[in-house]
Image (cartoon, rainbow, N blue to C red; front, side):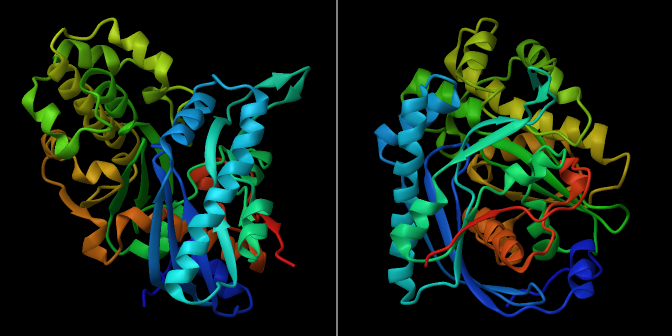
Length: 392
């Protein structure tokens, strides 16, 4: 049983409220890599200690992944997005039902992040009306119908309505899982790389750094017809083109101050094709350099935005980037002297950490506990995120 972080802002707020009952939940997540759905069956207590009971994953059929990526790259019409919303709802429902069968019991609720197809949280207007927005598909009413379990979802929208970026949301759980007794950077390297800074020296904050595996996967598929660079082998066989790397680092997003968030709305196929014009001819060097970009942007973000607020004694890595040896080598090169750990060192399977996080967020929704962190998202106030589709 994992215990909550001591002296954290979240747990202080929980203590100020009435204690709540223990619930079982299935948390579900599908990220920017668009490879499938991860789910965990978890018991959550009133003090936010938790126990993961079972986990399960399903992959997306190739056709579904292609259509999601088309939508995420702004190449889908409203008919396709409408259909995908219900198709993914059924796939999320299937994943949950398979986990229920493995566990032998139904949970009290399901919490689903859904699949992001567009995220536009920055200031924008249509006819003078604020158009900041986000869209996650995988309809929760379909999940509730397929499973017979009350389902919580659409978390990001409430934070954006409150003036936030709608992300990152996982730091809420990071505080409770990893605690704040020493300065730590909880570094996720999924499709996008993002960091949560946990330190006794400052308030918890977090932000999206830039592309994690997203651009690497694009170029590996384009040049080598593989879904990803297994263990970073291709990158390690190439040479980093320092001139191209320096040009890539000029992307304006990297210089923006947190809170900030990004995704395929910026680092999409069109972006990859644009930067390819200045890439080296050797394809292995392309992969080596674009992989170095992931590590370098993380290091530069720490130097600009983290180190002025707190030192970092250890980095805790999660996401697919954990398995890329070239990324790890880059982090050690660009951030010497900082110990690098993995989620497994804390008894957490990094594959299911974000699913766990959304189970915790869903618990708060049902208990009407504020579950965003304005210092991380930029929201004007704490709010209760999430919408509910009841099973009955």
